[in-house]
Image 1 (cartoon, helix red, strand yellow):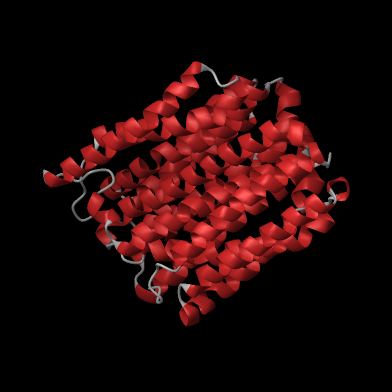
Image 2 (image 1 turned 135 degrees about the vertical axis):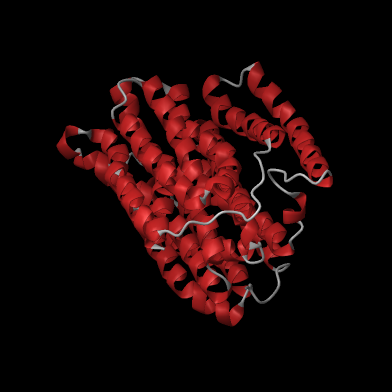
Length: 452
């Protein structure tokens, strides 16, 4: 568990650790806004579009083997990011880093699902959910500290170079301690499904994450128009493949499992709001309040403490109260977001990390009560033979939603803050995330009371 959780922590940490380093990267490499967004977006897009394929490859070739390959390539691509001589080299290395993360993450969830069952699986998935949420918050805190520390004169490069020894440690530990597992009847790679899923996600994420920086050119609107076309084609191809007796990339019958379908419905608004919040807060603190990278990172420590505290108590609460824990988390998160919004609207000029601390802490507690059991809900009824596919689908939903939140709420904030000011733009983004909390609250009431 320690080994696979280390393998999960690093890729999720890197999704957000770069946020606070972007201004320094821009200054050092003269990247410009469009290329700078590609540094952040390239990782998330490559990560999201290849996750299901990574799960399928683990089913075929063995999850420990793919874990080792993924961790080794993550170390190499992190080294390439840290040594990048120019902005475009960094963009390419970040995309390759995201692709290696897509090999790694599904094997973590797949191994946990295949190697455990019953209460042990529930506890393991709860711990995984806790590690995922904490890594996001720690990413921005640690990123600010590393950039400011300028270790051996590396500056922003240290946020990538830090991965190398830990990823190699994960390789060594995996060879010794992680059991091998694979699907009993592994299916071939679904080439048409993989191509269409990639096209679907790219047509949505690329224009949303790059359109604003590029000035919303024609290609961005064309891609957005193609998104529903690709999505429909993907659904039809997958359904027909299963009807023929083949094993599609995302089997429709897997999505008919109530726990998985309802859990994924919660995952999308939850992770989209989480990802958008982390990005918007980082930008608002650095550009709006002119805080340094360390102060901006430390402003999120109350969230990390709240999330960690909720995660520790989560499994015990779930055993007693079941799905009501997620409902309570949605309510507490909504109270936290409302508190932050009212605080910034009341006096934006004196808004500070100290004044936002109560709301941030409440939001962290609520997010911990949702995120910790969510993976347990989604994968609780997935058969061990389909662990890789189910894990890939869940991880894709997680990473796509995080990227979607950054793209939508981040673009909205950056577009409105020059005219509305930091306070009103931040409050509007928090209000939109609040709607997501209400959506999560409603969907949690549709879950069975008992969580396996």
